[in-house]
Image (cartoon, rainbow, N blue to C red):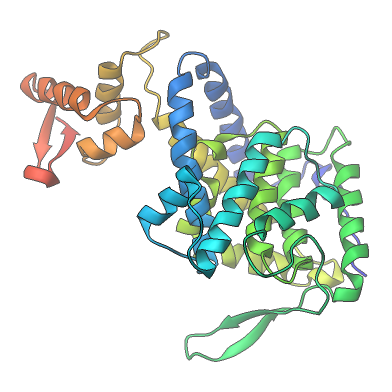
Length: 348
């Protein structure tokens, strides 16, 4: 049976690039915390947008899809699912709501993990809330269409005990002051995925547990900029990192670092995107027009009015358009393209 040892996180011998990412996240998290009071309405709007993207992205990774309009109806209006894929989508919606609303009382313990899984599959015919009863394998299809086993998870008859060992190892490691709690999270997630404790929904559960652990440790950017959608957008790199970190896992000779780096880089992206939503002038709270101006002037690429309104969800198209017109008139920016394809860039 596989046992778990996270003591390598104590010795401080971490890759320099990883240390830099962690430092960047810490700095951006401080900015986020400082902005909450001044921009409460923006955070509320961003959370609403991210919720839809999270439900869509996490399911899309697994090939579970429906139309854009239906995603919005299921997530925002609690619309009843109409088919198998929508059953899965509605279940993730409910499980995500539990994580968002109750992360402070939930924990990494068996009853909470099983409860989360049960809720996630509550709309589907599969019985959730219990570990797998049969062995499972992780398949991959190569370029020629040939199927092969990519990874053999823990056997069904060892799953409950292995999960208990994982939970105990995580609980022990998080009590050690020298262990970086942010880096510990992807270690737990990797081991959860290698155990593959459920007959269905392991990938989606890993993302729910990622958010739960991030929120409990004060890293909540994924609530406002979808963490799941970022994984979905870069899933080739995600699966490559997962593959590299799971090699020799059964022999306890695997390296966690490829998966840690991919996980932490995705979180950094979320914090950077969140930071873009707030353009502060000097030390004072910026007006909406000032934030539009700063967004355009700080953009390295031409940016459209629609993209500006997405980045600044509390800014109306009318306000954005007026600010852009003034900036063009004053020679600060220039138009690129025309009609609906018009974009704006800082004038050199």
